[in-house]
Image (cartoon, rainbow, N blue to C red; front, side, top):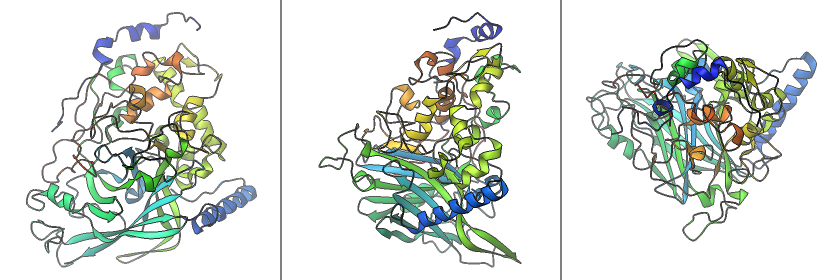
Length: 542
């Protein structure tokens, strides 16, 4: 290891007391398909790819259909104007209370203000919402779970969402209702898992939804064959200090060593006090990953078997054309992808502005064919900013006097985390030769803790059941990725040291408790009295 001279940056870092910042510290908040290569989807993608190649060759410009990311809140210019199509987070984990199953969750509609009446939040009847599963790592979905919606307004003669207290899902006072259908699509065709299922209402207030938890429990549907489904409003469980991070990559606990210094402050949970809309499905592992060896109880037996690893992402599709008439929107044309989400924060802080809309529009199978996208992983921007703003070096990128040097080696560690899976943990059968941005889960790694009780640092905290092996609701993916980008993980041991492996935003957990059973996502904030937004976190990091 090369010895470095002591710099002004080193002296600044030395002023921060590790006992104050680098420790676990609870924040003072409430703890209360079609067949591969042959089906219509792949024909559509093939036709789209051919059209893009033609346009690119003819004009020198790549025109890609609109709509990738995870923990993706307003992450790209186009999707920021279309919140009902904007998927915000994807979760995939072994269900702690039903370990023979995997729970898949995707959220849409970022920053839902709980008091956002009189037109409260809903999915869009004209869009298709999907959770995609790749069983073998070729970046093409083997199973798709598709949600479509139908809105029914019982009484159009009132402005009220409800005309009295809603005490049951079939309550006649429930005026603005939304029904949905879920289809499972595989190589063998499709089947309906649930049709005309009714979502619970949004959490309006004590007069309108006096027992909201009971309404939500009644909206968990048994689809048969061990499958459960829930769809509806939930608390925004992703926790992050967006206010500070997007103010020149500020991390409040580390304010004193930023190139534009401020006093150290506790983090603020930017998504605290807001809601999202959730689709969730719990599926037996034997169905989701049929080639993974399981025991008589349906639980996988061989974590080293790559056939047990699935790749997961969600996506939104819209028709290509919308015609506006007085009081009416009429969509037409074929469906195209407008949003995609796999790993958290990829489109926010890894992909650059010029690629964000493109990234949202292409499937994972295209990722490796776009050199500019791959380059954002092998030579990411954030480590350069770490050097300029904090004086931190990182793998393959020397930092002298807050000036980054030339990159000496690609970030193969990030390729493993985001594009291929980590060998021996969650790499798939074909993903090493078909890199693609997906959230990968080794279904044979058993839950290590109860519901929402795992080590929030996941794999880098010694808990292989957490992110980046899938993603649980409790995982502090912001801190994990901040550290991974700095090389502060076991994959790059030379940089797995402070400050690289201690970086964080000071928001160390969510502001609401998880549910004790499926769908696990916390109860949404009530419109009438939802407390404060941006609850205060901590000046320490886990």
